[in-house]
Amino acid sequence: MKTTVLEVQTGHREVVQDITPQCATFVREVGGDGVLHIFVPHATAGVAVLELGAHSDDDLLTALGDLLPVDDRWRHAHGSPGHGRSHVMPALIAPYATIPVLDGGLALGTWQSIAVVDLNIDNPDRQVRLSFLADAG
Image (cartoon, rainbow, N blue to C red; front, side):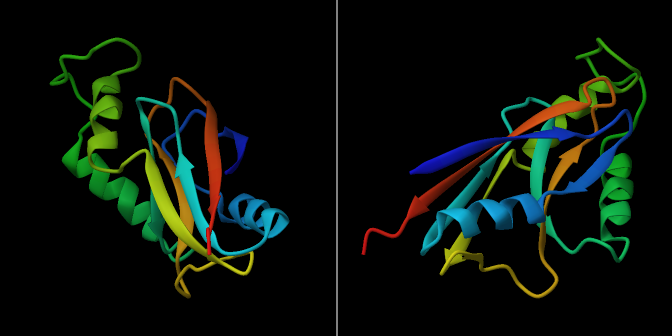
């Protein structure tokens, strides 16, 4: 297995941040067939595979805002207002994804991208672990 860690700056706002180019570079450099596993080792971030650039990212943030409002209902209450919802989000947007890799390329659909989803405005510094498991055949 080959692995690397990306340092990702998500800023101090809610974000759906595209990491597809970094993932594509990693699997191209490793080469071959296998699977790419993407994992964010954070309690308040997730990984999503979705269309980006056509406002789907904005729609996702709006939907998460409807499901997980920024208010005082959260028992996990340290940090900025509504911070507790950031700790619930990874149950909805998992902190991992697995993508097939064929001949050193991501086998994504035409409009699919890989993104870090981060509602936590208190922590702009994220790590993303990319792990490539080569086909044993």
